[in-house]
Length: 213
Image 1 (cartoon, rainbow, N blue to C red):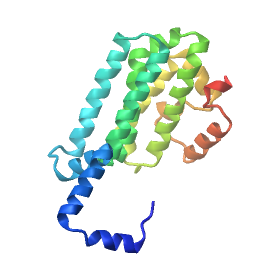
Image 2: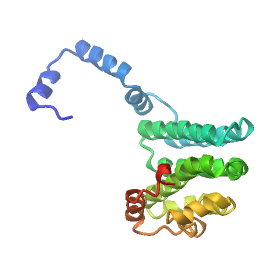
Image 3: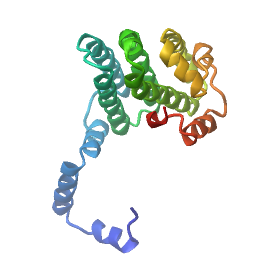
Image 4: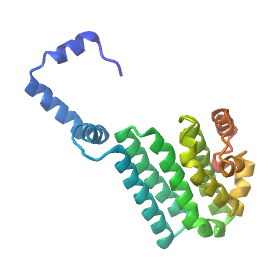
């Protein structure tokens, strides 16, 4: 949304008390903006500390996904909720590296603790979570590709571990092949320069939609 120059000027002439009231009213309606301003203006917690807190949260909650497992449908829902927390972290902190590293950690930890549950799922129940996991794997590669090349070294270990976990999950490995996801991109930590185009093509062809299986 864009604002006219006259409107901006009118706002600048508002009394300070009136501006404060308006800002507080707006912040009450925008939780993310309020958290972002608090982080930037007040919080003594560093970006790295916030990221570390998210990493611990991901590790603990993915363990609970295993201990409290009910079905792959609920597991998929739990993953989405935790992914939402990562999205909020990124919006609040503008943590571009964390967006890639935390999503990578999430998928790795999910498979690390829940591969047996996913493997045992019936084909009908597997297809929805399987497609979602492959889509997340693609998204991770695209996010990493947007970062400075130096960051790849920090993510290499988790990339290789994730690749191995996909290989260890036969139905997921089969779906990866069908969707054009080369697991060697993870195992070798070598992301194609055109990964964004590959991802767009795979999506456009409907490979990342469960209803097409």
